[in-house]
Amino acid sequence: MGNKKVAIQGFSGCFHEQAARMFYGEREGVCPEIVECATFDGLYSSMNAGQADAAIMAIENTVSGGLLPNFELLRKYDVKIKGEVFLRIRQNLMALPGQTIEDIREVRTHYMAINQTRAFFSEYPHIRLVESEDTAKSAADIAREGLRGIGAVASELAAELYGLEILKPGIETYKQNFTRFLILDDSLQVPEQEIDKVSMCFTLPHKSGSLAQVLTILSFYDMNLTRIQSLPIPGREWQYFFYVDIKFDSYERYRQALTAVRPLMEDLNILGEYRAAI
Image 1 (cartoon, one colour):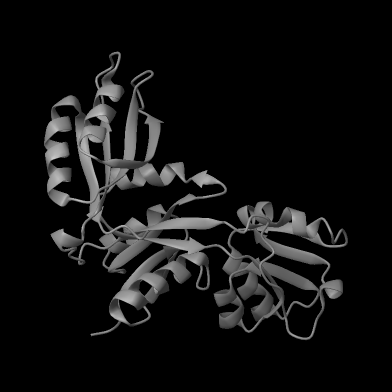
Image 2 (cartoon, one colour):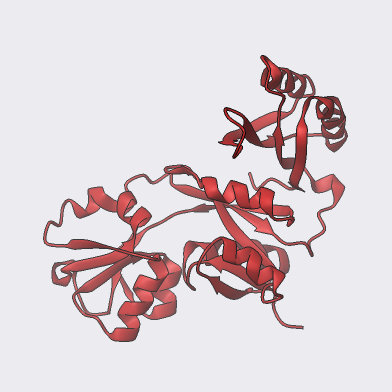
């Protein structure tokens, strides 16, 4: 049996692949086979078509916040969260070997990487920043086309895969830059004794104090609400889906809390019960 096929959004060498290697390397001791997808919707399509066994999807970043469309995908598709990875995002300037930063006149990378490295490039006004669709693809294009004088900002993995030389490592402005990735893998069975985190989505009656009631009950049962995100419900004015992450020490206590709050909620959807990464 071959290695697990894991769908990622982006190209081989991107941060999604790094996160996939981290999770499955630690869990199964093997490097997963990567299935590249152009969009986050494509992750689910590849699983539905049998092209991928699992997927990994970014959900939030400590600098840029949540990827809001991806919360909707979690609710839309019935694939449960089975784990998470927190990856330190380290941006690196790379180019074909034998060049210096003075030789680089143009750098290509994803717009988010540009935003995360503007302070560094302000010291090199001769370099033009050009947006591309993916950090790793920028690196791959330089290697494939033999582009000298052109650099990319991407991961260390991309430099390794495409034979590029890192001219300046760690050029991101904020060093405490982490992205949280979710593991979507129906084949994984998480033992109950390991579960200490849940992600869920629900709506509430459109009346005063409904959210406060839920939060009060969760607090009573010692549930640690680590994230709450609200998104509008299409067609229902000023009403929202609430996406929450909750950590807990006792699975039994969590089940008691869920029983207590369930009557107050509408359209409750447990998106996944899993082991917290931190």
